[in-house]
Length: 323
Image (cartoon, rainbow, N blue to C red; front, side, top):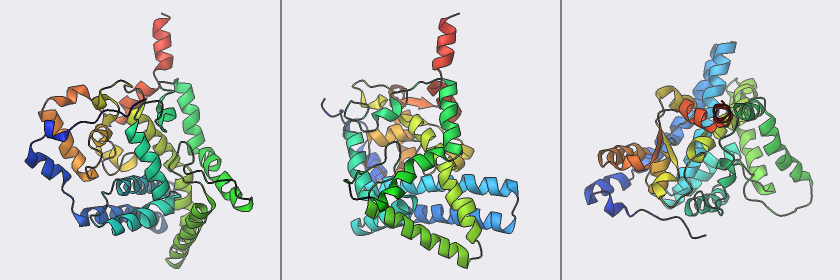
């Protein structure tokens, strides 16, 4: 099947609007990476200073969301938007964003650009993430339980660890349903960087919280919000020819941005329409599309709860049809 159609931005935006949307500042991406790591450090500091069940829960949720944030910033680097200097963009995207959470920038880029080229088409490598939806509430609940109890984490990561002790059998670039990268060298980089993070936490007197916050968040909250992100972006969207309808924008509130959708990842329809816009310009692109009346062609939902209702509507639809 041919690649999906592309929208010529010159048919939508004035030259001044497009210049403003595509403008990049080298410090902005650096600030976002610093913000992600600063939030993770603050989460660990919070539970270190006030160790109780509530602060621990908040710390795990915040850290897990910012781990997703690191993956999102790796995604930004894959589009060349993290820094105006290509070398810095690649280094920051790989070593400060991708490797700490078990990903690999180069592998992810080749996989992800194919997703953009064939969005919602049979050749889309992410199609299996959206095709099963809508599902029943019970089906989604089982998936969420597996995420929050660490079963998804073990399923994704354990084979990569065990592969270190087996003869080489090829190098799959992406562990399915995740941004996690397969391959012995990538797994070793992940382990070495996480060992360094443990050392930093231990030297700061918070070694136990490397496990209790950083690793626990990676094993529970990160898979959970990654699944929600995957569902929100493409589940129950159109597979037709109009590129305005291939992805969804979710109008996240402040709590959702803090715990589910960091760094404007919720503006996914705008990203697919104009994939080389810096992530921090996506809200402006959304505003302009609203002003120009084009938002009516897009799939936009008022929040993640509404998206999850849509994605788990199969059972209710069947009940309605039966009476």
